[in-house]
Length: 123
Image (tube, rainbow, N blue to C red):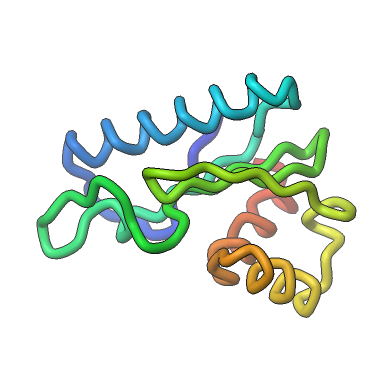
């Protein structure tokens, strides 16, 4: 599993632990649905720690994951995980479709745009 970061910056051990906790939470969520495991993961470090303060949860999704096999998107804010199936491959969505999907599912469009780039790059 490759994990990408929305922004590159040093992460404290507690933040690394929370990211791993969120990864495990999404994996359990996916296993419970008996779906394909995500193969592209993107963490948003600024949603895990602000001004030196580690956040147990955040107001927006801080970890997103995408399964290229099932076209399913998973997200967590530290408290809640959700899953959404895309109408087709993430990389095939137009910028407007991506924006509409993000707004309808309360996701950050810039995070989804980065995830789309990662999928397109084969990461």
